[in-house]
Image (cartoon, rainbow, N blue to C red; front, side, top):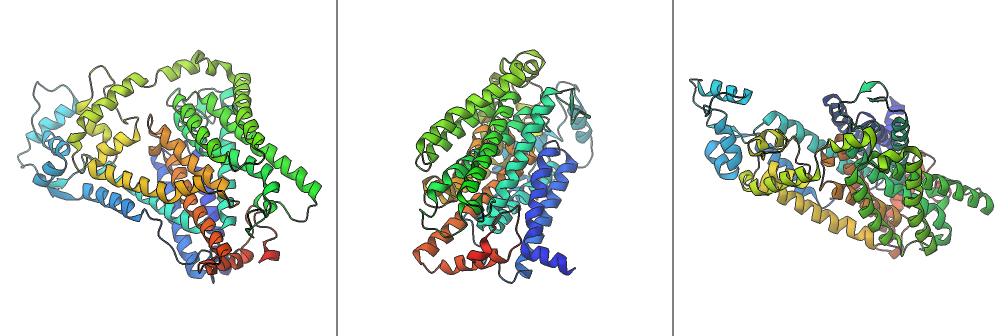
Length: 543
């Protein structure tokens, strides 16, 4: 029992709990099934409880008292809106704040016109023959069971964001999570390539794929691409950091971990050994980036490729003034796509030509034209959603009466996360999400792109670009509704907040502001923490 308390107090339980979820979410078929989503929620709540226990048991909390992130209000109001969708409210109020949902409820008790042709018509007839009058109070959501499921997942992801932003607000812990994400993402990409070479129509060579578009452990290749494109900027930045850190050593005046510690090395090596180790680690990091990009190309996800290109452009533009020598940035920027294309061409040129069985399966997906038709119809019908929407997670049921002719009979997703959020949560939900996004971008993304004086600024840029890449992809797909991708997105958002806090504390220490006391507490605590993945070695000598 004492050893468990010590593990909780040191943060090891929270750290390795997060690592377990990082590994589990992509490997569990992207965490899209009920059992995997339940385990994800259970894991996040368990980690949150361990983080709370750590604050109670640790003699000196590593980051002081919990601080606000600046997005609590929009997140809290979004959750409150979901709760409102689940509460029974008068039909007259529903008609005012969600006219489309009100009509859907009325249709469920009205006799069908034109005969009974579908199961829905039969249910409407059965309800209309019921002698009981329609309820005057009922939940706003057209499918309260689905809204409860999605709302519960949203709440646990918000909890994950808050836990990560607080727990990882030390240099050692933040880099621990970065390494865990990198190793997992590289392993998933490598597995995807191997499975592509030996594809037998089954995921893990055992479970039949419900669709021909599976790639790696994901059922849909677009979701695999969404996951990989969030990991790629971290691998690229790790390579830049490892090769360029020697020229920056002590130049910024910060007295945190030196570059050997950030790489997980030891200060006991001499210059030649350290240089050899640094270039070896750089090669591994660059190889990981090439494998990640190559697997993205092989997946055949056009939206993923476009999002990765846009994110890569932002990444190299932001790193341009931070990398010395600048020729290094040019070389890596030019070499990465060339090496990835050569790898993809060597492994599977048929995917690049969109030919063969792989190409045909991609073409069987919803085309851009059909998606465009749906987007226009959703945008045209948005006034039906009103202020409160049809209910979180109810797009399939609520949009079915508005499906345009000539498209699929049922659309379970809008293939655009922003339109679907506005449809399901109405004007209020869209406003809260926009408010939260702008507040987060102003408080954390903009400073990350501007900062250039701290050793962790490279990683802040990488995390910001990772988030932007998935947001770009969400314009043409629904990656934010995939458990593994939503988990990684929330974790990276919390990690960006944590990195911002580390930089702010170190900057305050350097300037001698009153906040320097927090920095001193940080150093003393890190000196007493157990080492994680080899990070922070040599910290005792500096503590």
